[in-house]
Length: 122
Image (cartoon, rainbow, N blue to C red; front, side):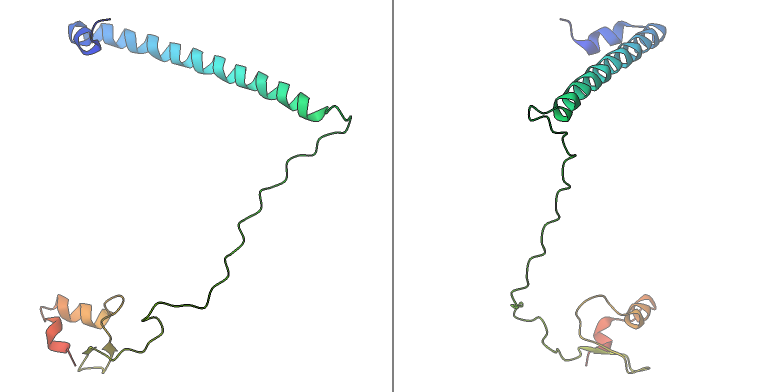
């Protein structure tokens, strides 16, 4: 079989558009056939489920239970829960920040104004 890109290089725009239309129709036809085949298979399987050899009517499958939440072990990381001294302080308001987590708004505003974080160290 020839290389597809070589064939496309030799085709005109009209030929490629016609080819695209043919491909679209073929894909639609194959997809439709596959859907019909799957629907037929599903209906056959539903018939098997509904009439089991025991003569009972099948019950719809149970919902899958959610995973049980794991119990906490009570163990924490070595630094979790420890108090930390303030590392930065705003001289105007007295607000402080330990340097952990998100940068506070007051410090971001000062930095946006051109000041450096070092100026606010305790």
